[in-house]
Amino acid sequence: MDPSISIFGDWGTSRLRLYLRQGKSVLDRRDGPGISALTTSPEDTFLELVGDWREARPSGAVLCGMVGSRIGWVEAPYAPCPASAADLRERVLKIEADGLPVSIIPGLSCLNPLGGPDVMRGEETQILGALELDPALKTGRHLLVLPGTHSKWTVVEDGAITGFLTAPVGETFALLRQHSTLAAGVGADVQGSDAGFAMGLSRIVEHGPAQLPHLLFETRARQLLDALPAADAIGFLSGLLIGADAAAARQWFGDLGQVILVGAPALNRFYGQAIASQGGVVTAIDGDSAVLAGLTTLSPRKNSDFHVLA
Amino acid sequence: MDPSISIFGDWGTSRLRLYLRQGKSVLDRRDGPGISALTTSPEDTFLELVGDWREARPSGAVLCGMVGSRIGWVEAPYAPCPASAADLRERVLKIEADGLPVSIIPGLSCLNPLGGPDVMRGEETQILGALELDPALKTGRHLLVLPGTHSKWTVVEDGAITGFLTAPVGETFALLRQHSTLAAGVGADVQGSDAGFAMGLSRIVEHGPAQLPHLLFETRARQLLDALPAADAIGFLSGLLIGADAAAARQWFGDLGQVILVGAPALNRFYGQAIASQGGVVTAIDGDSAVLAGLTTLSPRKNSDFHVLA
Image 1 (cartoon, chains in turn yellow, purple):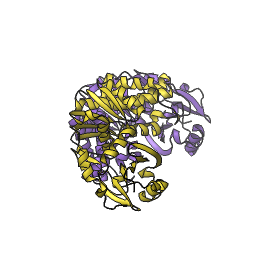
Image 2 (cartoon, each protein chain N blue to C red):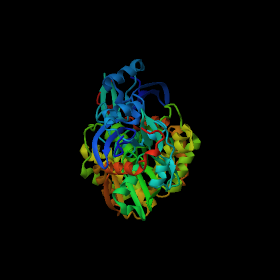
Image 3 (spheres, one colour):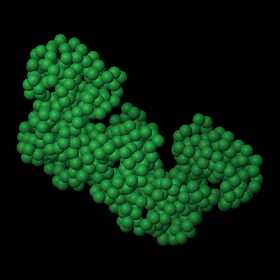
Image 4 (cartoon, rainbow over the protein chains, first blue to last red):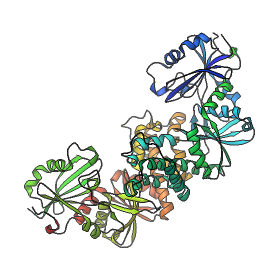
């Protein structure tokens, strides 16, 4: 077993990304099916994908995301907020697969800023990774936003995640885009335009996020009456949804101030515009880099942390 | 040809309802496919369904809804607001099918209360029908709400439709309920509970309609963390969406005051609760009755209105 080599994985609902690492270098990367798309057991899927990586004698694997949910490999109960990296490391669930130690990072639960229950799985790793990539975030209070299928607005205080709020913005966009009359007749390959996005954003700035349900239908009416091109209509829909997300967050968070975006560059760009339209100033961190940094910091500190040694 | 007998039809996207009428009596009723589910041409579908009704020698047929859209039988261009029953009668499109005169009622377009373009097809007939069923609505200014797939908040002034606003609330609910993670694992036959609906409504009253995107995810988190039963979760989702619709309307309409609901009884009941939670007082009119009254009032006044006489 080579203690410098390990396997890292981000195993979400719709995709699995596996990395073979030596220290901070990524030696190889493989993609696999998400938890909701498995055709064999999680363990078999994992072992098959890992395959010849075993020849490098990795010391173990560390996985975050839906892999630890009730529908995943094994359930790692949610850790309550506030939670620091040390808190999460203590709660890592340790199993093994064909003799390979596997650590599964638990998700987080909290009472969110609107007083409702909330959960995350996978994002906690990205957030703690972002704090490693920009250590200045480890002191004081910061608002981090992880845009995506389920956007997470997260408050970090002195290095601990103290609360967060989920908005299923990406999921709502995808459903309306694929199945609703708002985008009826728009080809599946049509990408939203920047001009359309800016128009949607400006409608939210003009009328406020409360009017989102009443502005959505404009996506269709503008195509029917104003011959709005399909790419602009899709951008408009996206601008409305992301714009309302940012505007609503300002209502409960107060002045947004400096906001740290942790996500894919394209999403970071759209959210950056929406947050700027609400007076926020944005710093962007790449989501994939944050996951790797988070998996590193949440890895067991020594081999004896594992139940079973290779 | 018997001038006392005619065929009325409400031909929407997802269903066709045909009525054989003599005066104000419904002699027979037949259901058929909506415009988006046709397997033969609209004319052939219509003639086949009408079938033996022709033996009663109806004077003609009057149809409203998506039948007059670009994807319907023949396009009846939108009439602009303000529009009274007389305005719409003037714009009825007259065609014929196998010698039977067919009148197609145009839809309406407007610049809505948020300054956006908006359209309706079919609801104009229900609204003008509601005014026939309750003639007191023909004078003064009234707010009528037609809940449904695309809810229509409509202002009527002295008998004319002066403006309206569409919110795709029913469509959004159906998509989130059927396809999203919010209702993942909830059987398709689970109906929303009244208790869940009331809970969703109260979350909107508490936090305001702007927080809708930030409250939606509670539907899932409450199932995961609080073991919220599936029927309550579906009711909760419905309460959030309908509650936000009513609360947002109050922001642009001002005090809701007396609101006339025109729709199916079950939907009227849910919207009644949401509007009451915003201080409105509701009167409900059955949607099917309103359609029949509207088709009557929009029927051509004499046979010579038809291009082709039977």
